[in-house]
Image (cartoon, rainbow, N blue to C red):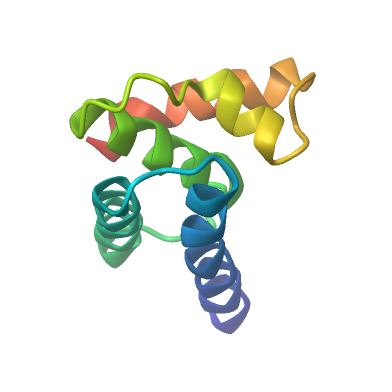
Length: 99
């Protein structure tokens, strides 16, 4: 339980950093943080991997706030995961449970 909480908090701190890497506006940053916190308020990081969920939160926040310049590919590229198709698929699978 403690390890799960540490993992969740680690990636919670990374959400704003990811937003900074891709120059996301403040609205996207706050929306992504709220998506992440709301998701893990009722779910465990042992059920859902926080890494792809972090990317999904920022990606969905960009869609909600209508920041179309920041795509999933751009997010992954900014975090040096650009060529990882497996991570891209895992992020995409996280979007529906996030909503």
